[in-house]
Image (tube, rainbow, N blue to C red):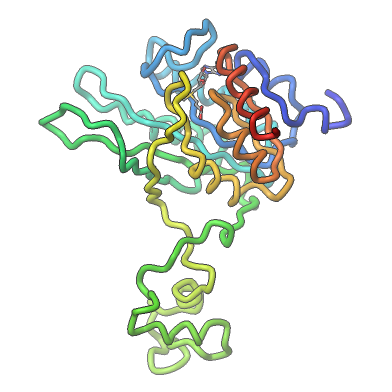
Length: 289
Ligand SMILES: C[S@@+](CC[C@H](N)C(=O)[O-])C[C@H]1O[C@@H](n2cnc3c(N)ncnc32)[C@H](O)[C@@H]1O
């Protein structure tokens, strides 16, 4: 490994993720945002591709192995956002996202959140005997219990207390000594401890919730399953400091790298398909011009 870690930055590496990750030093990256191939979903035209394993067990083991290598490359303060969708096989829902998430938890990752990515423009489906699936999972996992997380960077608008709300006067209490109801007539109400009240009237909005409604991306340029940039943006703003390094071991058309660059972060992207690597490099060149 090279001492000058800047040589590893801002690259798209072509090849099998598990192999290429071995070339990267320990404790280099701040965060990982990635969407691996889902089990038996698509053919990515590569001998080393993930997702075509014969059994669910083999798929899960491979995901754990690739992501163990990623964990080595993460700083102790680092984290992983893992986007996974499910699959029906012989009429049964496999529950694959959760099986992978629990296997990762057992392997040393700390599972911190399960986010539902709701896709308001998901493809219609012909199913008549169950609800149509219009979500995927985004699992948030950390390497240690002390990880970098900027909650303020991804706050969302309050819905309970709007400008029109009768309780909007509550905003004036924010940060004022003994200004909150739990210090007054509501003292002792366990639903109104300080931090909850502060959250309710936080001037930057409420803490990010676990259902994210984000339409599918319009950029399809010969690649399946492209990330919507705003999904990646949310993850990066929360878990990568300015100038930090973002890794995507299944980078596909390069969305993670493009968003990282646009937000002033560095990137390393890996993909086993040469065409997708070229596509990612092209997109990165376009934003530099
Ligand atoms: C779901 S796509 C990722 C799409 C990406 N998030 C984007 O926005 O374009 C999964 C990618 O993993 C790649 N892939 C599959 N097996 C791989 C492996 N063993 N090593 C590296 N990349 C792999 C595929 O070629 C595909 O581009």
